[in-house]
Amino acid sequence: MNQKLFKYVLLAPAFMLIAATTFYPLMRSFWISLHEWDLKTSVGMGAFIGLDNYIRAFSDSQFWNSVRATLIFAASTVVLTLILSLIVALLLSKDKKYLSYLRAVLIIPFAMSPALIGYSWRFMLNPDYGLFDKIIGFLIPPLSDVVWLGTNSTAMIALISVVVWIWLPFMSLMFISGLMGMPSEVFEAAKMDGATPLKTLFHITLPMLKPIILIASILMTMFSLKAFDPVVTMTRGGPGDSTEVLNFFIYKTGFRYFDMGYSSALGYILALITIVFVIIYMRKLVKGDDWN
Image (cartoon, rainbow, N blue to C red; front, side, top):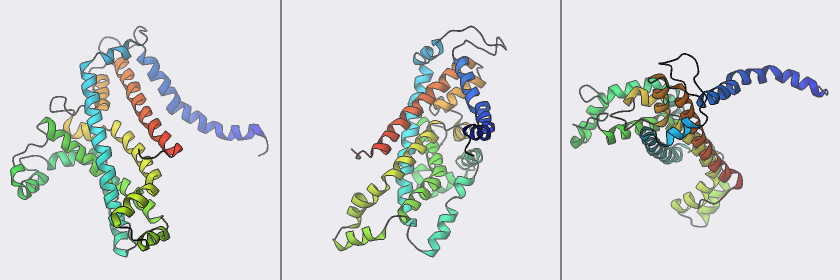
């Protein structure tokens, strides 16, 4: 084990597997993005065109529409998921026996297939025979005639709600683990000093949860930017192109229009957007910046 070469021999199979499944596809797709390749006209890669596919994206109105839809979808999903999961965590983090069973049940939505969830919610939101639509109509009569997946605004609201429902359990469990790991002496001292529950939340609980909140923000941003299953199963980018997020637009460009070069370039643009957000979050996590 003291030989320097031996450790690399042991790691070689793992490196080869990573190279075959990660590095090579990345390099290959980047090389494709620098070429013109329309599968409708040729099965082989076309001429080298450099950055023309990337330049084309910034003059494409459909691309900017997908960017707008992605930002609305991602921002709403991240904010709502973090706020609701924090509320759920505060309610379920108490040291009660019955709450441990609720915490176990909490993981069920996250354990289900996103594609199955999308199809299920599409069925339940159907205005003719959907269960959820009937429940909403019974509880809130003015919403009884709403076609949830039939208009631009309601389709986006329904899509965001379902994605929040999918990721809420996972994020709640992250916050619950952080809350249950906090020292009780700090809260007892704050209570003795006369701190109200609201002051304790904002001046003790949230600052101590800051690393977990930032990590949860990174994960939710990544999950939201690359969301695909709920979109393709619920709205398919519609009505019109109101819910056509960037990931779905990449899929449509590559596997409906068969423009492989352009879709590869769009994929790298999405990857770059994701990396920018992750870097911003990581800088705050590493430096421990204040909330402001």
